[in-house]
Image (tube, rainbow, N blue to C red; front, side, top):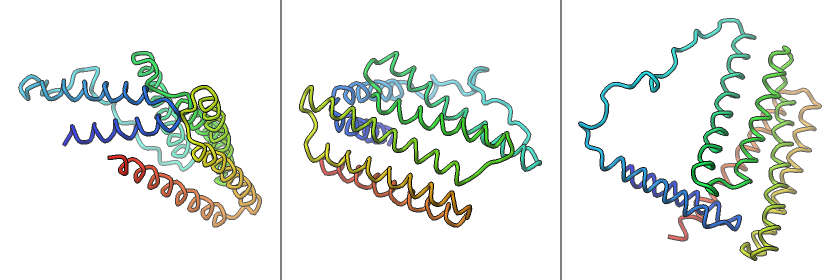
Length: 222
């Protein structure tokens, strides 16, 4: 089962990178996952430590705050730390296997970190706003979509490794994200939680549709 999961993960990453014209990067990650799976399979159950080492044990759980403000701050801090660790993992992997992470992948996670930082500042200041956070998310989505389109155009000009249809699709994605930003700003102005929730539901639905499209595209190649 582990081999199947690793194979699927390698294929998904390779497909994403290939869509930006860097199929060699997907092969590097696939090789890395295959090597990891081989090492895991080679180790007999008796060779694995039964007890975690001192550096492997999870940190002691912090007491959950009971004050609502302190709870919000703690959650925002933990969310930010998780994203920072994700970004550090990508940086470490890139340093070990050069070219394994694309610039657009770095940019996407880096944008999520910025949103989490802004959210933490708002929460600490005692004025968290769901609408304002949605606007920040939408702005980052626009910036990311524009960055991906710019990168794709550069790849197209340098190696012609991206189809005209894919390039056109990336341009339409930028337009969609800009319209979503306008809708988020409009919802934030009404100061209605229902409007903010409606925007979030629409965004979630669109994201699920994108994931479904990507999954179907990957399975169609097999």
